[in-house]
Length: 63
Image (cartoon, rainbow, N blue to C red; front, top):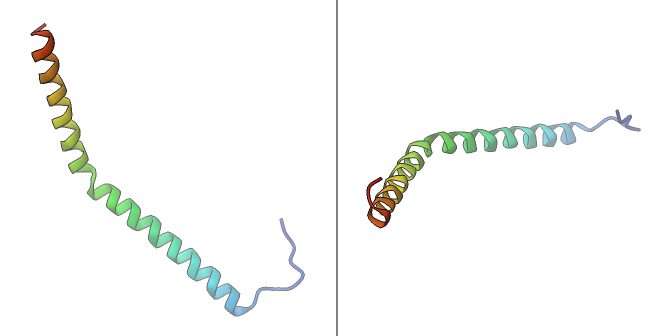
């Protein structure tokens, strides 16, 4: 634990609070976009998997 020689000023506390809020908002926006982009990513993965499966069947024959 750090003991400060002087207490923070009101402006320093406001800036600290503002930075904390902005960080929380950025985290929330990132989580939102991650959640929104899950379905397109899953669809891309499914199509890639199907393309690879078709390529392997074509290349090596049905097994």
